[in-house]
Each structure stands twice: as structure tokens, then as C-alpha cells.
Image (cartoon, rainbow, N blue to C red; front, side, top):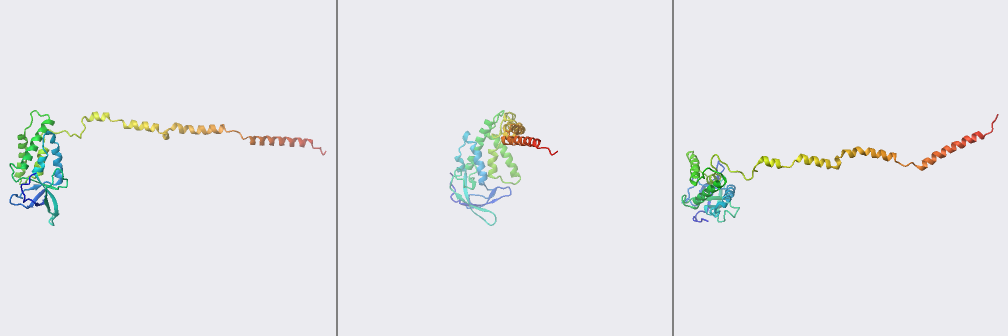
Length: 263
């Protein structure tokens, strides 16, 4: 890790209208010019680390990140809305609590940040040539010329190029007219749709198998009740009572015939 500037202990940063953080004051004004000096916030650094991970399989050395940036933690927020951050010696790669990263641009031509920019450009070219079927492989010079042309336009408009934009211009670079396939997007959409199960048919089968939905069984229930009533056994006591009443009526008729006539 580059620790060449022992006087760099703190700096004051502000949030610009472009939603990037810019340095307004620094502990070492001799070696650092705060005019157009930007710092990378943790959200931005997280994205940079994620994109750099894609370059590792092409030979990128992630340790260059620790060498290329000075790490800072928040100290306090000032009344004017600026934030004072203090130097941290922890690794940017290992310490997720690091909040701001300042590129080491003391030597803009041969310093560690310049080396970092060269390396991610080199391995971005390898990634693109590997993933895109160009008629002719692109080169580092082509990417640098294309990006430099875009940056010159910002300079002409009086805007400073923020380090996050400078880095992502390389890490996200794709030549005009080409695009990288998104690994999360399934290939062959039509085939995937055809392979999906027919959910409607499955629902119909479940309804037929549901006992509560068997309409035929419900219609047969009244017939079962009728059969039970028809097959109900006759009460023997009731039969004896009826036969006894018939015999009694017969006896009364006989007695009435035996009575003497009062003629």
C-alpha cells in the first residue's frame, strides 16, 4: 500500500450537484491541489470492486487497488454540510467500514493510480475480446482514444472528470454497436417458455382429485337416504297393536249378535 505522503491525515469533502464527493480542504496542500480533486464514496467503491473482480480471471491483480487509493473514515460533519474524514491504514479490500477513497495522483504519470488505470484498461480489452466476436480484436489504444475523446468534451464544458467516472468509463466500456450479454438473462427465451409446465392443466387435475369437488357423490346421497327409509324394519309392537285392535272389534260384533231381542 502506498503510504508515501505522511502529511496526508485528513481532508474535508462536500457533496456536489453531480452527486459526487469533492475535496474542499486537505491536510497537505503542498502536494495536493484541491481544485477538481474528487473522492470515491463507499457505494461507488463497492461497484468498482465488483467490476474489478470480473477482471481477475484475465490476470488483474486486486492488490493494486490498495496501492492506488488512500482510505478515509468519517470524523465529523461540519455545520456547513461538509464532512471531515480522517486517514485509515486499513485495506480497502478487507475493511468494509472504509467510507472514502482518494486516488493517489501525486504522480499522475507514473504513480500507483496511473498504474491501476493502465491495468484495468489492459484487462478490460482482454475481457471484451474474449466475450465479443469482433471482426478484428480491439486494442488498448482504441479504448484510450475513445474514452479520451469523451473526457475532452467534459473539459471543454468546464467540468472536472470525477475519478469514479474515469474508472467506470473503462470498467463499463463496450465499443459502439456492440453489447455484452447479461449472464442473468436466460438465452433462448422461446425455448424456455415452451419448457415451462402447464400450470392450468395441473390446477384442473388437482380440482378433479379434490373430494369436496366430486359432484357425482353429492347427487347420489339423496338416493342412499331413500333406500334406508325403504329398508327400515317394521316395528313388531306396532303390528301387534293393530292386530289386537282388529280382534277386539271382532269380539264386539259377536257380542252384539248374542244380545236378546226386546221385541
